[in-house]
Length: 397
View 1: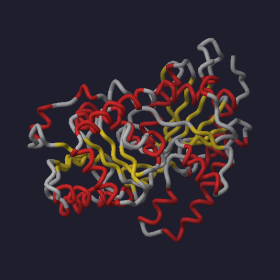
View 2 (view 1 turned 90 degrees about the vertical axis):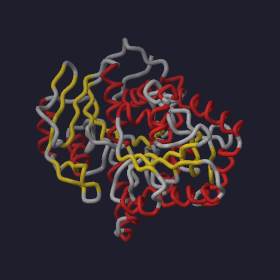
View 3 (view 1 turned 45 degrees about the vertical axis):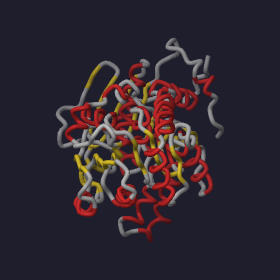
View 4 (view 1 turned 60 degrees about the vertical axis):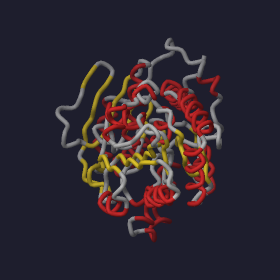
C-alpha cells in the first residue's frame, strides 16, 4: 500500500463525521515505556478531534474503576505479567468477551497496538464481526529474542508477528527503514506513521543550573546523557565504553544515566564515575534532558526510539547509530551525528568531535530542536486519523 500524501491529510476538517474507534493495547499509562506513551498521545489527539474512543487494555494494579466520560470508555481486561518485563502486563485471550462487547457497541474500526493474546483476540473478534482493523508494529520482539536466551525462536516469532499483522487491513510502522525491513520478510499493507513529540514539554527552556550543580559539573563540563530502560537489548555497554574512551582523552565530560532495569547494578559497577538517577518522569525527566548537552543512543533494537526525538526537542546534540528514529531524523553534522551500525570507534570519534568543536555543537543543538518542532503530535494524529478514515471508507474532502 502506498504512503499517504501529507497534503491529503491536511484536507481533513472537523466538519467530517466523527468515528467510533476501539483501541486495543496491552500497555498504557501508568506503564512507562514508548508504546504506552505513544498510544496515550494518539488517544488524546483523536478525542480532541471529536472521535468516540473505547480503550481496551489489561487492568493495572493501580487502576480504580474504568473511566467513563462523554465520548470515552475504558474496558479493563484480565492480564498477567510479561516474563521479561514483569512490571508490564500481557492481556489474556478475550475473543468471546470482545465479540459480545462489539455486538452491543459496534465500532467503526478496531486499532490494535500490541501483538499479545489480547491483541490477537481483538483481531479475530473484529474479523468475525467484519469490522475494519489496523495495527501497529512497535516492538522488535524477534530482535529481543537473542538477548533473553531464546534466539532459536526468532523464526517462530517472526512468523507469528507476520501472520498477526497481515490479518489486519493496515499495519503502521514508524520509519521507512523498518517498512523496508519488514517488507523483505513478507509483511504486507504497511504504512509509515512517525512518532511525535511534545515540544512544549521537552524544551531547552527547562535547563536547570541547580540540577547541574547537583551533578557536580563545572560550566566547562559537557554532560553526556543516556535515557531508557537499563536492559541488555539497549546496548548500554557501548555507552560505558564510549564514556571511558572520552575520559582517557581528558575531555571535560560527565555521564548521567536516567532509567532503571535489570542491568543497572552491573552498569554501576562497570562505571562508578557515572551518575545513575533511576527512573524519572514528568518535570524531573524534562529537566534532566534539558540540563544535559549531548545524548548518546547506541540501541539497535528499537522500532523508533522516542528518547531520540525527546532529546532533540530538548536541544541536545544526539549521537546515535544510523537506525530507527535517528536514521530517519538526523542529517549527519547538521542536526546530529549519525554513525554506521556497530562502529564503536565512530561513536567515540563523533562524541569527541562534538565535545571539542563549539561551533559544530551549537549548530547541531539549534537544528536538532528545529527538527523536533516539525514533528509535533498534532501532525502524527492527523495522519493516523486519515488512515482510519480511509479504512472505514469515508472519503476525504
